[in-house]
Length: 278
Image 1: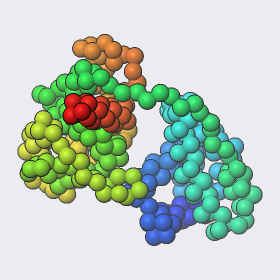
Image 2: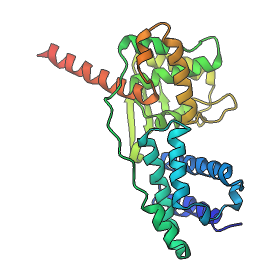
Image 3: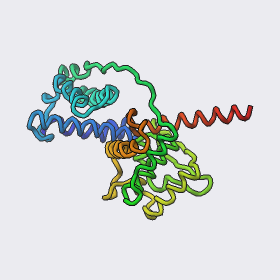
Image 4: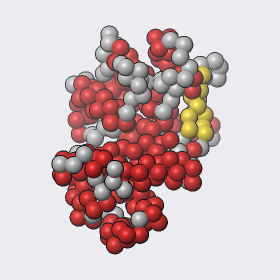
């Protein structure tokens, strides 16, 4: 076993879990970053992950990996920078444990983040949201699951990590109906549910059965849906919804688009309410 494998394991068990007490969302994000990196290195070097050493992770290789994320996986500059932040965290931890690789580590830490232009916030109109929610096939188990997920996302504006992290017990349908989640920065929050959303979730929970500690939105095998899987499902349903609502063709619809749509709709409703009250 090389020096990379035990250091990588200690980074998760000692640094993230014990020292900084990172949130489950952060741990998952870092894990996905290193999984992509190890897969990239195996294809590039022909070495299995257990055979990789620090010399295989020079600044040139890390830069090539970041370019690969953009060119081959279609990641944005923002996503690239998030992956780089995870790598920097690992290399800062390694600097204290492997001074013999100080120069290599310093070169990686010197890789700059990529600058990017901030794009306008994209959101869906009520008609576009309705078309998207109607797109999943209710005759199939996956379709009913996806409709419940999209309905919850569109009404509450939960982040993708919050949606995939929900368990069945996080949904409370007794009045007042609400969903509990752990959000960014490990903050606990509670979001009320509309009667329409509660009805969809009530039907889905009835189909899921009484499994309070299991994922609210699982795969066929019962595992938690990954972020990538949700993104693929949203893209698929958007493609189908475009036939009913052609304006969707001009929009890049992602799970985060639903979050923006929910926030904007909430703000619009508040303005309408204040205006009518005045």
